[in-house]
Length: 340
Image (tube, rainbow, N blue to C red; front, top):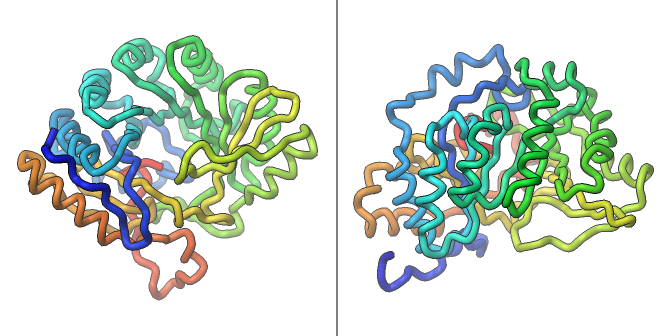
């Protein structure tokens, strides 16, 4: 650990840095229509350069620097992070870093079952599983895979019986596609400790064909749910939480709504993102990243570079989305490059 510890850094909007999301690979075996539609898979193949992906040792050094600057939560994502072999080794290394309180993983769970025990034994704290439909035909339509929903649900059950502190389900809702899955999804997981979070379809990247009319707003989802079960709002668990939390009045659990389109939460965003090739992105909707790979073996310079990147940050894309026109709209980084 560098001595003395670096002071906490804040950006141009007085936001500290607390959460680092690390993309371990820009490849994925799913072809979800809101992220990497099958007809655009050539974009991934053209961009992906696995030989240039950061090694686990390099990632660990970057996490060390971020921890010095106040980051205490790490989320491993992708692409599909489980396409990286021996992931438990990286988790174990990150857990040894002073200041890191939590290591989480976001996955489509298609490859989870064989490695779950190793990940938990290495110290994985939390897991989020992407699941956009319980109906098998609809799930296949959305994801472009032959993975069985029942297999994913079995993996969820295994997660619940493990030492993981929390299991979440992320469900991206597209208007006219899967809003009819909201009630079945909650009915399935009510009474368990699984927290289902419904996410508004977002304009991440350039290839998902996003249009405002495809957004099923969180307030619409909330009305559907409230018409079925009595519910009450819950306070956020921490500053910068992306989901509005609600609980069932009968004590059967909670769920969340992530409303990047209808209720932007840029004012509290404390998340940075590290791409597979060593670029720092300060917004999910960023047009470009900051290259830091060349500094990884120079800890003092790396620390200073990350600090300056964050201090100069003033991103608030979601809050400014309505002011973005076709003329001033720039190409954004694809979701499969930096995760959701």
